[in-house]
Image 1 (spheres, one colour):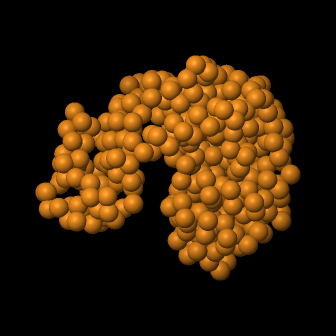
Image 2: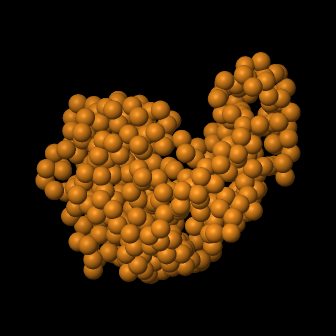
Image 3: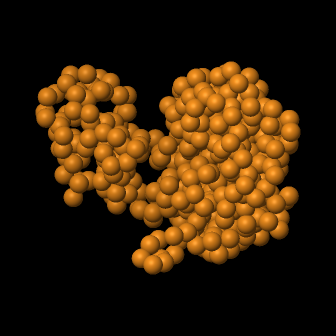
Length: 377
């Protein structure tokens, strides 16, 4: 296992971190529940292979992830770094501390190494976290007591807002957790700024939430003849970025842990030739994607509440990367889950407002129809 300094925190962390959001499950009495025994075994195997950074959150695995992780690391708690998160529900410092106390109890520990403001936006940071006597003021006091060792945050907002949060961090923020992989490079500038400011940088979704683990020919072609799997392509790409300290992978089996740990133990990064080839292929894939949509969002808002750019992104997973099952599965979620609260392409009434605003003059109405016919099947 390779280890690196985690920004200016003083921690020496493994390049591979274990995300405990996809622990093993078992069927019991007709229900799918999380298997504590198998979950502990997976976590311990990760530790045996050199992983020393373990990340969880209060709601992962139906609320039992923190409990399972706490039990798993009992024998080596002082040899690893625990990361968990606080959902910023309001601007109350008291409520923030109550949520922290619940996590401490579930993890059965008296301190947390990296404590994150969870999935924040710029608005949340300004109006809630930085409020007087709010979460930031409270966590600074808690840090002085040693209960929280480092103040961290995870990010899910627009890429440009990450830059603004970092600039407003005032030296209090010590590590960042954000999305980054071959298919989503939007946070690269923010990661670079975080690294410049001395923050430790952890990336989630290095295998694209499983998308890049699917062995499609389009993904394999990114580095032809070299990698054993598309997972290797994805992880080696992330590790090559000098601003990334940890690739956080949600691993639900011992087999996944062993495969990812072997890749993270490879001391040879992508060669200049491999990196150049990869960059060329990624740019070509981006060019192919932009034939359908550049993601500029000038077409928005749609009068029928269709999120046109997001729907075309799903179509590109199918068209460019061959991730058809993934694209169809996510298309089926539209209107049914919190992060896809909009209508699918079948809601288009052919008004043409979007095409009037599109700087690329794309035939959006026809493409929406094609997308629905392809992804709704």
